[in-house]
Image (cartoon, rainbow, N blue to C red; front, side, top):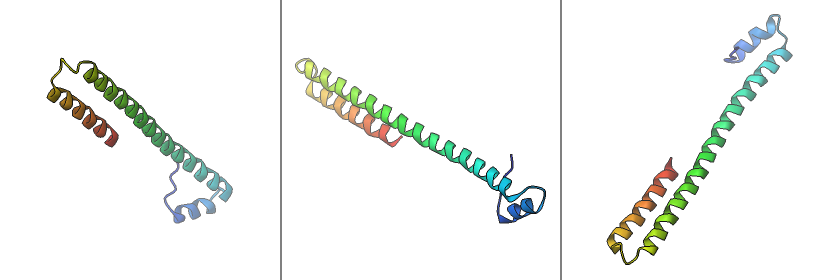
Length: 96
């Protein structure tokens, strides 16, 4: 793999047997490859974030439903602690 480290290297390549069009094409290919990898990393990170948000919302809704259905069985302090804990887990997953 050829790495173009600066103008001096490009000028040296252009003076040799390689034409400037070939150097430009190689540089564009390397740039496109690097850009594609950066975009894929950003897209996968966004995909992961969206899925974590969905899972956290479902978890909070399930805990809220359980607290509502068991309102006479579960003490209020435990129910409040469970809801606060679920909200904290949701906030921590947004940071990731």
